Amino acid sequence: MTDCLFIPTTFLSLYKQEDRIKMLDLQIEYVQSKIRKETNSLFLVTSDDSVSYDLDQERSEMLQKFLDAIKDVNSEIKIYLTVDNQCSTWNLKGLSHVQDILWIDHFLFFVYYKVICQKLCDYNRNWHPSSQNILILILRATAPQRLGLFYRLVNSPIAGRLKWSLPNAEQYEEYFTYLPEIDDLSGVVDFMMKYQRRLDDIDNWYDGPIPFDPKVYSDVLFQIVSATCFSSGLPKHSHLIEEKGWLPIVNHLPFVLAASEKSSAMLERMGFKTFNKFFKIPNYDDPDSDDYLRLPDGTLISDTLPPNRVHVSRLELDNFSDFYDAVKDNHWPDISSWNEIGKLTSEQYQEIFERLEDIRTESGRLEAVVENTISFAQNIQENAEEIKAMIDHNFQRFIELGEENLNKIENFLVKNNVHLSLTEVCCGLLDLRSFVNMIDEVFSKMGLSRMRGGHNDHSN
Image 1 (tube, rainbow, N blue to C red):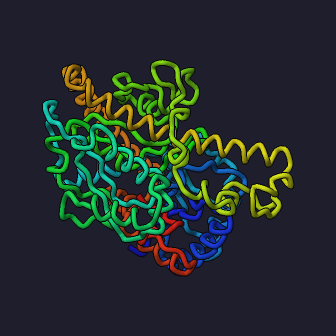
Image 2 (cartoon, rainbow, N blue to C red):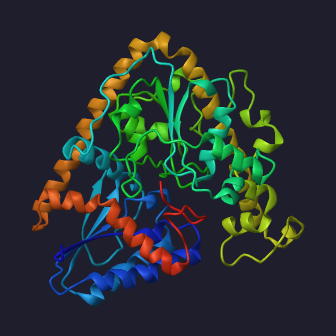
Image 3 (tube, helix red, strand yellow):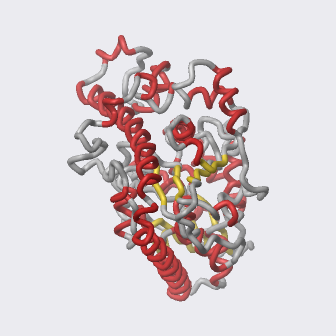
C-alpha cells in the first residue's frame, strides 16, 4: 500500500556503534526510496530487538536523524511511533516530527493476532501432566546461550526426556565459538550432526515461530523457553519476552524461562503466573534477591562450575580483541591483550571487570536453568492441580491482554484519524516477512548476513 508505510527501526538494535551508523544511513536511503507524494502516514516500528537497549543519547539522536530524513522527502507525512511497553523507560518527549506514539505489548500481540484473530494455525488446548516430555525449540542456533544450554541439557539426567528441534546451518566455526565445552571443531560437527532435528514441516523461516504445528506442543510436560536476549547487565527495562515466550502460554503449558534477568518479574507484573516456586533456584533471574543464583545450601552456583563452563562463549576464553571490542567505547585506547590492561583508566577497568562478572553470571544462570529444569521435572506431577490452575489463568490473561492491545490500536486509529482499517494496520505492524526482506536488503549492502545467522545476526 503506497499511502502508508511500516518501517522497523533496526539500526537501534545493532550492538556495535559503527554498525548502527552504517545501518541508519542505509535505512534512510531505503525509506526515502519508498516514500511517494501520496504517502500520507508512516509507522516506525521499534518493537523488535531494540527493546533490549536503552534509548540513550546516541540512539535518540539517530532516531531523530531518521525522522528528519523522512520529513525531508515528504514534509506532509504523519509519522507514528510504535513502541513496546517493555520500553517504558524510554524518554521520547524530545523527539520532533512524531505525530503520536502507540504503546503496545508487541510480541504478545503478535502471537495473539496471528493465532487467535487470524487463525493461521491451531494451538494445543490440553495440558498432559502425565507426559514425560520436556520441550525445547531452537529456531536458530546462532545465539551464544542456546547451544550452551542445549549442550548442558543433553548431558544432564533428563536428557532422555527432551523433545527438541535444533537447526544445523553448518556454521560450525561459529557453533564452535558457542560451545567452549567441546575441545575441537570436529567435535562440534559431530555434536550438531547427532542432534539436528525438526519437529514439523512448516517453513516459518521468515515468519518467526508462527504458524506452528500444535502437535509439537501436545504430549508435553513443560517447555524450556530459550529467548534471544539473555545477557546479564542489560538496561533495567530489558526483560525481552519475544514471540517464543508467549507460545507455551497460548499452548497451555508450564515453562522454564532462559531469558534476560527479571523476566519472571515482568511477567508477574503483567498478571501472569510463573512457576519459579517449584524450582530448585527460584530467584535464578532476579539479581536483586539475596539468594540470587544460590543453591539451597547457600553455595553460589557459578562457584560449582568446571573451567570450561565458566563462559558461555569461547570468545571470552580465547580472543581478547573480540571481547574488548564488545565492551569498549570509541574513545577507549586500542589494546590487543590482557597485558596492556594498564592503559585503561580506573573507570574503564571497572567496566571490564563488571563485564567479566556478567559473563560468569550468565554461565551460572544457564546452569541454574538446567538445575531448575531437573527439579521441575521431579516435582511437577505432585503439584499438577495447582499448576493446571496457573496454566488456565495464564491463557485467560493472554486473551485479556490481546484484546486490550487490539482495542488500543483501534482507538489510536480513531484518535489520529488514520484512514486505514484495523486489519491493515495490524498486518502492517506485524509483517515480519516484509521487515526481514528490508533488513536483508540493507544488511547485504553492509556485508552482513542476518538470515544466514552470522555474528551480526539479530534474528530469533
